[in-house]
Length: 276
Image (cartoon, rainbow, N blue to C red; front, side):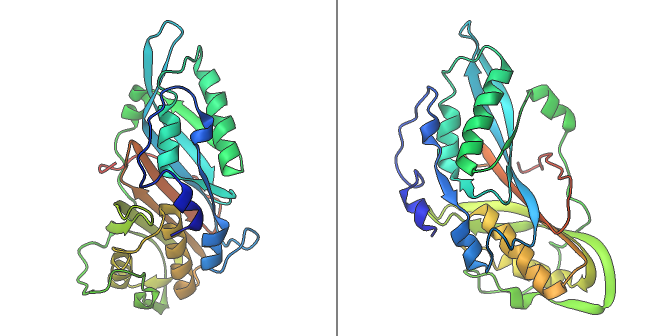
């Protein structure tokens, strides 16, 4: 477990405060988890973003009438901190009985508070339900590998040694699976997700990728670190010319977390999946 997470609201009874309280946000430094992966802020082999989507965003107009909307928060992958998810939820709940005359006023507050917690500028969008509904539900690109025949019996630690590739074949493809599961390192609660691996390089054996992803099933780590570990393990095995790994996690407490990591600049698609 991340040492800082021990002091977070995760796994503890919490009072739900309904008026604006930015001090509820609990930042957790990324550096210790980077160090576990042999990385520092200066040696990250990827760029990217963590998209958080809030489906329970609400505040009051000056008349006292409530507004509901969907919030989108883009936290840079190289920001010094992640924001602990329960504290994020508690913070957003603190807006429920808070008056904002204009949406721009709310946006400014969200950008200020979240950027301060993350240690780097956070992108914020507040979107109407009609706008998000109009986008529909997305499907993942490429080939689903979930029908591959695999045998695996160990689930507590990711097993990169399972990954196999054919160096005689150079391909450019997208593979995805809906069988990703890991556990919260503090509460032990399950985190369910779908993961995409897009690359150009030696052909990755789909069954080996699926077995590797399933080996995360009882692994305890935050969403962001799971995706970073997958990126690094695939990169070491394939040594690809290009690699993008991202996961779309099922929401908990009205929030979903969607980390994207890539060796090149990308424009991530943040439309939700059917499970989200």
